[in-house]
Length: 229
Length: 229
Image: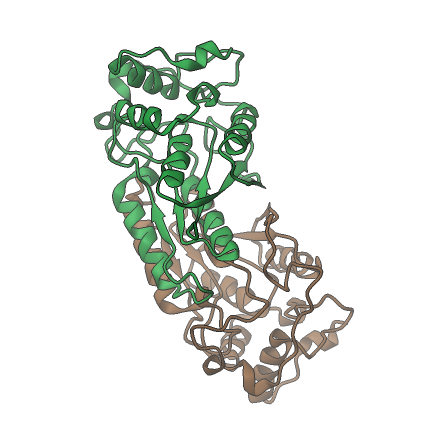
């Protein structure tokens, strides 16, 4: 097992699936978690647990954006609640960004992942982004990841890992397809945390809760998170 | 004056010149400074002074890389000293990176700048990188900045600043050309700090000191930094 990968891990359902996918592909995985002022620490705690359970070392990068702009990190803004019909990919054409969008978040995350990959000489970076059952963020779409591949290539890195690949294995999957894949891979979904709010139980009102619920419902499965509360 | 720009400011000679260049082009400038564990705080203090003198607001992003790899931020590594002949661009072909290289540093810096530009609705990001009299870093070359332009385009940003431009005005200039331009623009070079070490006076041994010295010498000028000590 010589291949190494950096996996961006948020504690949510998608990134946990990406982690187990990378492991199944034979990568020796190292996780990268961000503490960037999320309104709750729950997802960070869960991310660390998932990394540990998967046998992957875990690094945490800590930063704060000294500018406001997202309801996810701005304490003065409420996280929106929407109907399920509004949270499919067609609901967010270019021009409307949901308030939970954190400007350039995935770009920041991937740039740190690139720094880590260069340092530990990893050949790949895995990110659990997907562009079907998603919140409409522009930095989750296939063309964005293609542009990233091009950026990495432009660096002509020479430290033994010339071709660091950016792999977004879930980018064209629905939430149900992701869950089906993850169950096959043994992802501990009971430990994952998707809710944007940090209550004792998932709020079941935010985009993230609704997308998760939609996925399990389509598969006629109970979400194991409720067994773990 | 409606155009806004984010300027990456390090406290060094190049980024200060980029700042005054952006102002001369009619941009309302906001500076972005990083505290990322540099061995000394001198450049951060100078950056703030330069921003203030130029009338630009200044934000500081604070982060640490939880992995080692560069003599610039790793206290156990010495900053190398080299002869002037070794620090021209031909001395670092692909395959050899100087120990002062911080993995993915400009990628991380630009990703935060992108986040700030999206938030304050700036149309441009200025970076003082240059690829002639430089330390051979792969993230200072024209093709890297072209790849960044492509990445930003892929986002199809829709928040009123669809075309955030990445502008590296000095990328093809020698140090002497940069200083000549900066003097015309009124850059306060006495306040800039280039030395990788953080002594009372510049060490005159590191790459950065030598490149700076070379620039002033070619113009037969005294470096005003020595008047300010």
